[in-house]
Length: 273
Image 1 (cartoon, rainbow, N blue to C red):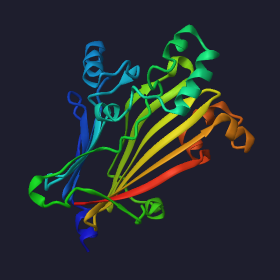
Image 2: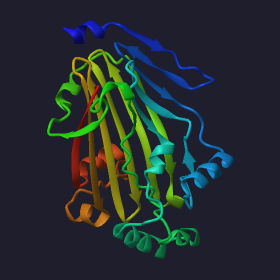
Image 3: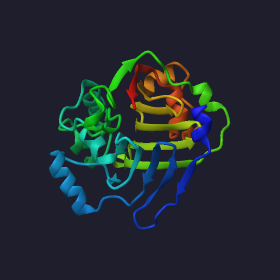
């Protein structure tokens, strides 16, 4: 059984205090995270110019990332700079405009500035950055939509955790009127790896939004599954359906709120490796 064969052969990469890199090598894969401080003022200005963005989140961890690297040259990387490149900063959607007007009209002068000129929620549909080797044929490393789903029950079976990390990619407190963040949690087991990258938005008294990307690879297979789902509910919706927690700590907990939000869409892609 190939799964068992690769199961024991792993080497932990101890986190380097200078580069911030740590992870694990297992079978044909290296899974690693890089954790560094947030971009400084100059780096933020350079990224703003590069993205032609009117404003960036207060905290951008542009040197932090999570990477899944196959020895064949395939790489799936989760990275704040690419995530913000996928944020459509200049075209607020109907909902965002409505929400920002409602929000800005009741808030501080600072909040009023955000208005409609740009998407102040930093919403991104980023699902990771794939680098694929050119010499492996046309289908290798390409994401193709599938009806196959990630087996979450299998993931609930207790297994040794060879590597676990949580990496914040960006965060903004929306001038103290809520939160917008993108983070990734990764774990590697003897049988495979699993990662949840989440964009979460809470605009106090207005709306919640969660965009989840789940990445799963079972070492006994030749493909990675990547599921993307969008969920959203307004405060009004949640109150009307009795879904709004009474405890403010629960309202701030993205795991707690995710379960309560209405699902807008869910798609899974299969990436052959």
